[in-house]
Image (cartoon, rainbow, N blue to C red; front, side, top):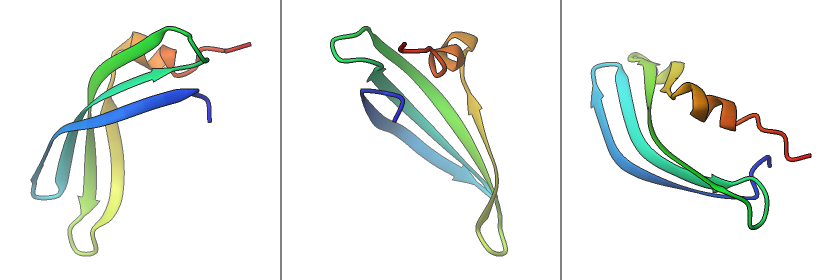
Length: 74
């Protein structure tokens, strides 16, 4: 609900044993006609093999990308 509009494109997904890596490009705007934020990132999802439950999700973001998630629109 924070972003006015966004788009996510998955570039690649690969897995090995109990890990899945999702590489994607994300683009969004906070307010109508506002600046566009765009970045590529990877998320590493670790699962428990016996029941396929997620153990953890780790994202690889730059500091700027992380801060952009918390910009106030007020």
